[in-house]
Amino acid sequence: MFLDLDGTLAPIETSPEKVGPDPARTALLDRLQLWLGGGLAVVSGRPVTDVDRILGGAVTCVSGGHGRERRTPTGERVDLRAHPDLPAVTAMLESFVAAQRGLLLEHKACSVALHYRGHPPAADACLDIAHRLARAHGLDVIEGRMVVELLTPGPDKGDALQLFMREAAFAGRRPVMVGDDLTDEPAFEAAAALGGFGVLVGEPRETAARHRLANPEAVMTWLSGSLR
Image (tube, rainbow, N blue to C red; front, side):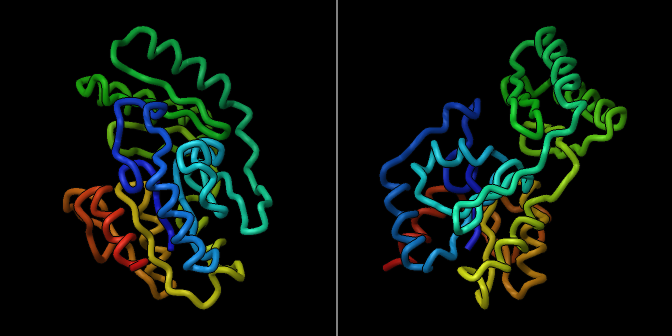
């Protein structure tokens, strides 16, 4: 089983640092990992260290940075090296954010995310500068819910899911990917290609997922019911 974090295991907050640990969620994931014999992974856009902070280190297998970071069942880290232009691009985005109101820049090892949830009217300007910088510096760009992120070119969430499926703990299992965002679509597609399926969390939209849950609370209820 594969789970996204924000919008799936935890509600979306106005800024990433406001999402924190929850003892009940951590206990549930502990039980789920044991029940699945280690065949559980979190596939997130956050860094692996941030996933551990929020989930209390309950899940061993974690992919962070939209596939750019990965921790295997043995605890080995397999991380992409950041693009050399990322610091310069980040500096330009910092200047852009300083001239706006309500924007937030999130720094990651292999990417930088520009959040405009605090000022939705700035969406077009944020998307424009992100795509222009990505083209100029050879970076990948992905759009999420009220966020646009510039990333070091590399694997995505679908690639991360496929790599985990080669591990012994996942071998022979039917992959199920639960996620809420557009960035989860490659993982939905990868799960389907391997005989599994995706579960979209949130409002209905065009998606490769086969099933849907309303919100993170519904995800927790579903996971708890599966354990019972």
